[in-house]
Image (cartoon, rainbow, N blue to C red):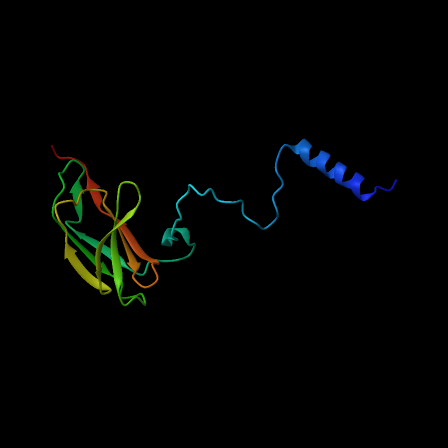
Length: 143
């Protein structure tokens, strides 16, 4: 039995309608909703990529119940090719707030907003690529 083009089209539509799913082209990712914000690639997203910057806090840890305080954030991205880095603080909603723009090795004193769980990212100023990230350690409350 030989099908003509219009009969073949009807058979294909019937078969696709029966599966209840919209066909997707192979190799093309589904469209991204415009309500989703664009996400920069991070080191943790890239398999086999090691950070090229280290971050250190002073104090190294804070009690979970401690009020916000002044501290120092130290960074060392000398193993990267970055000539200038941006040190960013990750806010509660996941956005990044610029803390410092400086050379690949440096430190800066904070205002009284350091608390346990603070997350810092060092990015190459020129490319925006992430060089390292660290979360300020928390210790149990002693009270």
